[in-house]
Every structure is written in C-alpha cells, then in structure tokens.
Picture 1 (tube, chains in turn red, yellow):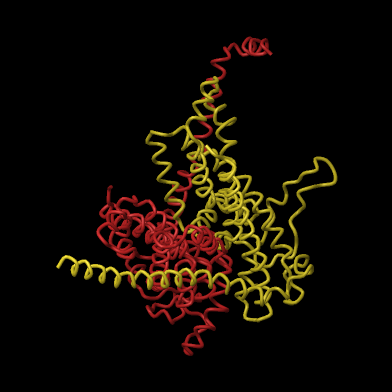
Picture 2: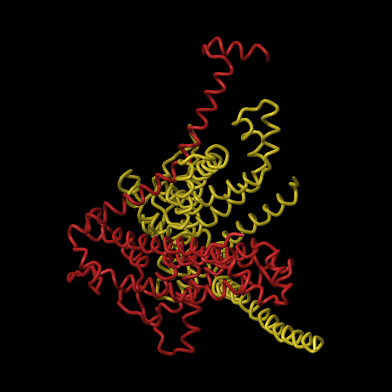
Length: 309
Length: 307
C-alpha cells in the first residue's frame, strides 16, 4: 500500500503530488468542456438559422418578407410574406395569455397568501402535472374535445380554429405562470405583510397592494416565460388550428402559426438546400427574434420595477 | 367619539373581509379550471382509447386498417431514442452542473455559460429541431436516424439537467466540503466521494423530469424527418454471436410514440382517432408515471437527509 505511489512515481518521473495536481487539472478542463457545450449549442443554433436565412434573403427581398400578406412558398405563384404566420402566432398567444395570466396569477395569490399548507402541498404538484403532459396530447384534446364543445356555443366555428388551440395552450401554461409567481410572492419578507396587517388591512388588501407589487419583478418573469412557451408551442396549433397560412386576426378562423408552418413543411420531403428548405430557417429565425424581443422587454420591465428590501 | 370611530373602522374592516371570502372562492375556482381540464383530458382519452388497449395494440405495426394497427415500432423507437438521449445528456448535464457550481464560481466564462443555460431553456423546442436538421442530419450526415433524434432530444433536456444538478449541489452545506478537505481530499475526491453521492436524489429527479419531457417531444423530431409509418423494427442491439452488441440500430429510421399519435390524430377517419387516444393514454401513462416517480424521489430524499 505504501510502496505503490513510490513505484508509480518512479515509472512516470512525477511525484504523487504532481500527478494528483495533473489529474485535478485534467478533470477541471473536461468539466469545463462539458459546460461549454451549452454555449456551443447556442452558437450553432444562431449560426444555422442565420446562414440559411441569409441564403433565403438572397432570393427573396426583406421588404417582401416583411410586408407581403401572403405566404405560399410551395405554390407555383410563390409569395413569401411572413405576416400571416406572425398574425397566427400572435393571435394564439394572446388567447393563451388571456387564459393563463388571470388564472395563473389568481391561483398564485391564492396558493401563496390564502391556502392552507396542506392544500398547497397537494394542489401544486397537481398543477405541475399539467406541464408534464405531452403537447401532442393537448393537441388531440383541443381538436376533438374543446372544439366540439365550443361548437355547441358557437355553431359557426370551423373544425380548425385558433380559439380552441389558444385556450388549450393557455391552460397548459398556467403552471409556468402560477408556480414562478407563487415563488416570487412567497419570498416577500413576512414583515411587510405584518406591517400591512398592523395597519388594519385585510388579507386581500395585503396581497394585492403589498405582496403583489413587491413581487412584481418575479411575476413578470413568470409572464415572460409563459409568453415564450405560447409563442413556441407547436403541436397544439399544428393539430387544432390548421396548417393554412391565412392573414387574419380573428381567433375563430383557421390559420397557421410560424411553428405550424415548420411542421407542415417538414412532414413533406424537403430537398436539402432548396428555397423551401431555407424558408423554415427564415421562419425559425423570425420565431427566435420574437421570443428575444419579449425576453428583452421582460428583462427591462423586471429591472425597472424591482423592489429591494 | 373615539368609541364611535372605532366602530366605524371595525365596520370598514368587516366589509373588506367580505372581499377576502369572495377571493377565496375565485381562487379555488381558478385552481379548479386547471385540475378539471386535467381530469377532462384524461377521462376523454380513457373513454376513447381504453377499448383499443390490448396486447395486439402493443405488438402490431401501424398499418392501413385502424383496427389492426398498433404502436410496436413507436414504443420501440421511443425506448431506443431515449436510450441515446440518456447516454448523451446525463453525463454532459451533470458535468456542466458540477463545473458551474463547484469550479466556475467567479469568472466571466462561468457567467457566460450560466446566462446561456438560462436562455437555452427558453428556446422553443422546434428551433432545436431546425438545428438538428442542419447540423446532425446534413452536416454530420447522420441522416434521419435514431442517433440524430437521440442527440436532438439530448440538447433539449440538457438545460433541465444542468439546472437541477446545480440546485441539488447548492443544497449541500459547505461543512461537508470542508470536512472532506480537512481529511486531505482533493477537490475532485471531495466532489466524487462526498458531494455527488449526497446530491444523487436531486440530480436523479432532474434527470427523470428531463427525460419525461423528452418522451413527449414531437416537433423537433418531425423537423429532422422522422417517418410516420414504420413497419419494421431497427436491428436488435444484442446479437447471438461475438461481439454480442451491435450498433446498427443507431442508423435506423424510426418513429416514436408522439409522432405516431400525431399521425393518427391528423387523419380524418374517426377509427384512427381512437388509436390516437389509445397512444395518448400510453404516452400520458409514461410521462405522468415518470413525473410521479420524480416527485416521490424528491419527497423521499428530502425526508431522509437532515442537515
């Protein structure tokens, strides 16, 4: 046992200590390389989207891309205006947020300020299960359960529509909104609440006028995450909202989103390097830019309203 | 006069407290929306799908006749793709988490990586599909294979595993690290022999949650060109003769559970939609089962470890 390190050092002409240091360095470098893989992924995503989009914009002018209201790259009469896809994305996102923001925020206030400990321990995991269900299952649910249900109230609703897709996405992102908002509200120090109670405020008044403003930076981060999820959601819209790029702001219409278009094209056979192949990268770049805009906006809002206590 | 005033204030507070009660009801209702949706979804799937769930459903390929179709190639595909994802993502994710938490505490490189991981977690999954299409399928020439699919999903779950690994490591008190150093352990010995074993519970939870997300992912795999009708199985990884293990399956075309379900949903015939419900039921069972295991593990480890 004691001779072993000595033998080793003779063979390698290194003292045990140097050997050990060397091993430590090698391990650290390996770990750093592993950690760097995430940076490499980001760089690769951007490089891929930008190079393919550049090739795309050599054949299609940026002006047409941004202003044409028709998107029909696969037809003989090809138009390359991204607006119909952007409008579809925005309409489903807005519908989803109209569901998720009020419900998620109220649920978060209730769980953080009103609910008994027992109830919270049971309800929170249940809500989180909502986020664990595969999106393709939500798509099935939107198309074959929510749409027929809505058609009983709105008989004119077509089989594919953005309304039911948006509603289902809304319910799907409730846990993202509620769980992060709740964490933010729970980390507001108790003495702020006690100060408010001491002034004679009720629980609701304390929750709305003291805790909510104090936690607003965390809550807006939750909203931003919800928006990112809704904008990038693919399967629900591809299944329930249809695959036709139609320029409309009416949620009762059928329309494709950016993500649905990428799916629709990928289902066919794509010749590598063709213009159709490049369109999905241009669409993908648009999607990333939209998410980025919301994230930057959220970052500044969060900074602007951050309360320090 | 002061008595009257006090009564007035009490009256105001009492009136305000009515709103408390109203809000409790509103709060419960909004919680119910989520939970009722969850129930409606599961019950809807069960009503349509349960009658189709039989042994035949798991042992048949997807064919033209809905009643004879099954998910054999889909669930085998899912298992194989998950195998690749787990082998690629788990070591890489844990190693990144260890580096960020234990080594790169205060340098700009670690900051850069950290911001990156946060941003990656917010990138829509279909964008990973585009990356994989350009990089794995065409640049690396992996084609539309199980290997390409597994690596795509590995990239997707990497941020989840990194973040949970870091949280697990952060939960371990410094006294453990100092005790290990005091006994002469090197940094890596401290991490490998002491910190990682204690963090296993948290890391395992993250790995399971990450993989359960990967099982349900559809969009990125459609983007890289997964087939929707596959009537054959990839080569078996195990062989009768030496060397007993074969890697030919990595190159095989594939389909997975969510894609099979998507294919059935998008068909107009109602019989196929029953198949979709049955596939959805199996899929939910897989993901919710994995989530339940993760929640249970978290609970168990939290109970067992007391600092």
